[in-house]
Length: 149
Image 1: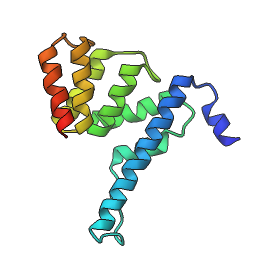
Image 2: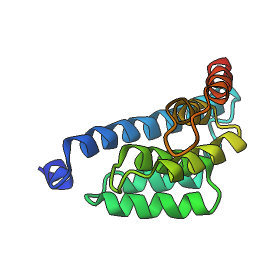
Image 3: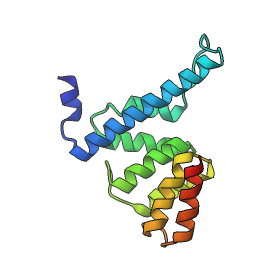
Image 4: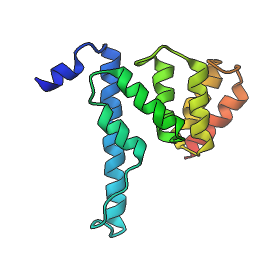
């Protein structure tokens, strides 16, 4: 019953996005914990980045506006993960209006911080000319770099 209240008022697209982001956050925490365990650091506290803590905490909220505000704040503080999440929200229009130019800026921050998935996201925008000039060569280079990672 609690999950029904949390999802009340959300569109199907927002619900699907929310489920994907919750799964991504969960996998990230698990991978950090597994990495710590393989380094025989299981007894130490596992570090989880502030952006992942914010994401995990706010994704369960009923308001996508709250998620957007929290992720925007972390992105403004320089979190590449938050920039990627914000870029995805802007590209898909989840919780906010679609803004391809701002999404491209967010993905570029991810590329600048060498975040693997940022290459594919930014490359797809260049390939379609969404928010950035259509540039198939740049799109190909970004997508190829992302595929190597």
